[in-house]
Length: 260
Image 1 (tube, rainbow, N blue to C red):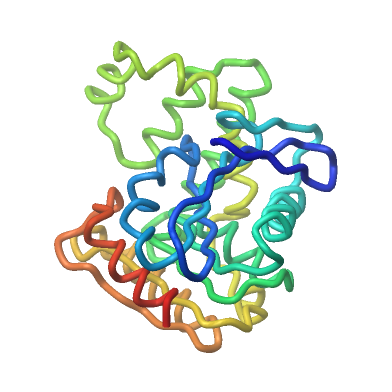
Image 2: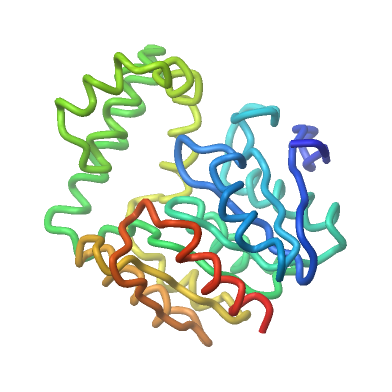
């Protein structure tokens, strides 16, 4: 991240820019930094100008209490100003929910694309699962039990206990614990975990909702619901892909959409 800008509340935001063509800001999901999306930015760079940034509380960006989803929308407003005044947005997972909220809020967003925002409407017991996660995560973070918070998130994603214990022993674990407070931010962005249909109806720019063909059916249905809720929304499935989508597969699809 070689550039900095400042959000409305004084939070410093680190970002980098690569490529040429229409400007697209890439929004990462939970436990991720802008660097997580750098491989995707590389796949886009020959057709669009890709902007990756560290969301507040992560990487080289700062943080300012108290947190509110509106502050992250203001972060995107600051980035839009920094890169020329308007741009398209792409968000992955919970970062997609943030991108959708930013587009619905009336920011100068030209187009929006998302990949597998995990709204749990079609997941059996999804609402109850989300409520339990919100409660347990809040309790863990209130007691500064960061490892416990990370475990809660990994279980939410479907990771098995054996894999979680392996993760605990891996060199990446300290970094995960360091980023654990930002899990509350993604939880707030996802709200109650259900599709915000009325809010999505306020998105007035073209939208592409993409899902992986090898992902769970409930996630694909959620993605289709996003496209249906947004006027001008479109839905696309990438065969063989999961939630950990391969940049070389997703990149050309996004480039076609953003360069249109």
